Length: 257
Ligand SMILES: Nc1ncnc2c1ncn2[C@@H]1O[C@H](COP(=O)(O)OP(=O)(O)OP(=O)(O)O)[C@@H](O)[C@H]1O
Ligand SMILES: [Mg+2]
Image 1 (cartoon, rainbow, N blue to C red):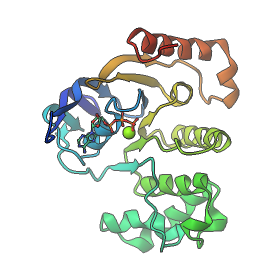
Image 2 (image 1 turned 90 degrees about the horizontal axis):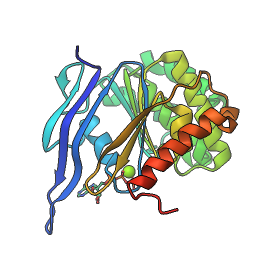
Image 3 (image 1 turned 30 degrees about the horizontal axis):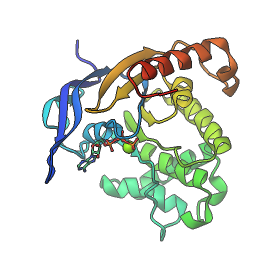
Image 4 (image 1 turned 90 degrees about the vertical axis):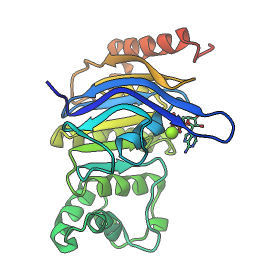
C-alpha cells in the first residue's frame, strides 16, 4: 500500500566549485496522512534541504519522492510552507499578507477572505488585521505566517524551525496552539526543530537526523496521550523519550556531554 508522502533512497548532492556536498544520503521515510512528524538534528544535517525537496523547491539527485503517489517536481498545490524567517511583506497589512497565498495560487481573494479572518481569529490576531508586520512581535509574525500557509487548507504543512527565533514563553504558547489546530484539522505536518523537547511535545513520531552526510539516525514513535498540556514535559514518560533521543545522539557522537 502506498503512503501519503513517500521518500525512498533519496540522495541530494549539491554541486560546488570545490568538493560536492552530499547533503542527504539514502533517506527512507514514509509519512501517513494525519501524522505529525518532527525532524530533529544538529545544524547542517540537511533538515532544510529535505524540507525544500519535499516542498518541490529543490531537485533531488536520486531516489524517489512522491505525494499521493505522484513525484514531487514542482511546489504542489496541496502544501503550505512556513520558514524559520517569516516572509511577510512589510508593505501589506496582516490580512493582505495572509491573502497573498490566494494570489500565488490564482484563487479569488474575496472568496478566501472569510477564511483568512477566521484563521487569524484562531491565532488571536483578530484585532490586528489592518496592522503592518513591523507593528507585530516576532511571535505574532510567525502566527501570521502559519495562517498564510493554512489559508488554502493544504493537506500537508511543512514547517522549518518556525519557532526557533522566539522567546521560550511565546514558543510554549505557539506549541500549544499548533497542537490544538492540528487536533482540530488533522492535517499532515512535517515540523523541523533543533529542540528535542519541542519534537517530543508535538510529534507523533520523531525522526532523528545525523550529519556528514545527512541521514536518518532513528525514528521514535511518541505515544503520549493528546491533547498534551505543557505540563506533560515534567512527567517521567516524557523525560524517558527525551533521554532516549539524547542518548542516541550521544552514541553517534553528536553530544559530547
Ligand atoms: N544551496 C546550497 N548549496 C550548496 N550547499 C548547500 C546549500 N544548502 C545547504 N547546503 C549544504 O548542505 C548541508 C545541509 O544544509 P541544511 O541547510 O539542509 O542543514 P540544516 O540541517 O537545515 O541546518 P540548520 O539546522 O543550521 O538549519 C550543509 O553542509 C550546507 O552547507
Ligand atoms: Mg535549516
